[in-house]
Image (cartoon, rainbow, N blue to C red):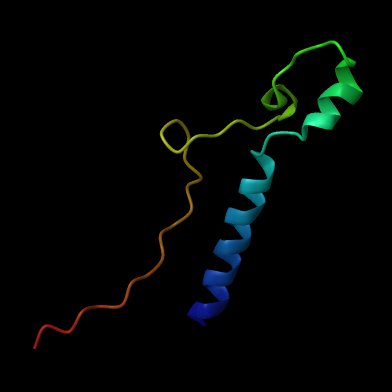
Length: 68
């Protein structure tokens, strides 16, 4: 059962990673024109950083260490 849950969590992480990526350089030229110097992050709707905003996804369950 745990493997399925971990898989869903990985899918959530991968979706969020795709949303925060910068746009390719050629899309900037296509949208703003050849002479315009705009940073590709301006075309990304969601801006996320690990210190600023969290995803609120529960951490992986770790196996208990046997100390005996």
